[in-house]
Length: 240
Image (cartoon, rainbow, N blue to C red):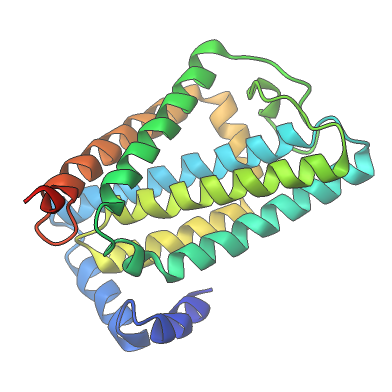
């Protein structure tokens, strides 16, 4: 996965090629004991863990109303789509962050994500849930009634949540490109390997979700603030 991101980074021009990416990683992690770098790293880890588990829960809940064979197909499609989308968004994240106003909009998007998470944690709504995914019975989402409907709902959710994940990681580690790169690779790995395990532990230990929620709110507020005042890409530049 690291090789894929590095090779594509050459064509995207985002990190200056594999050598530039590796230099950024070495630089940031050689200074990981510095408070700013360590704080950014912890934020990235928590965002990745919580959003990977949340993605698994949403996919499982949307597929819950289907027969077992179709349900498993939808869950597999959902996980694979999330993997592909996270890689795709990761490859262009540095370009995205250079668009005037996008950091500000991304912060608003994360506030909406945090509000949804808060409502789910507070209300504890129940739905059918899929036996393949632990914790999705508390999502409050209504399962789709057909394979096509479930696949479409999962695709839409994956696009939204993958973009949320990448923007949140980029916002948390914006001044630390090496941590940003590792965080994006970690996000892809968690979604592909351990999303359901994470969902199980988040369901068992709710404080993990609340801690992740607090981190997301902090990153969102930081992105909104910087997305307004940044002299290069801040939305405030549009108003002189």
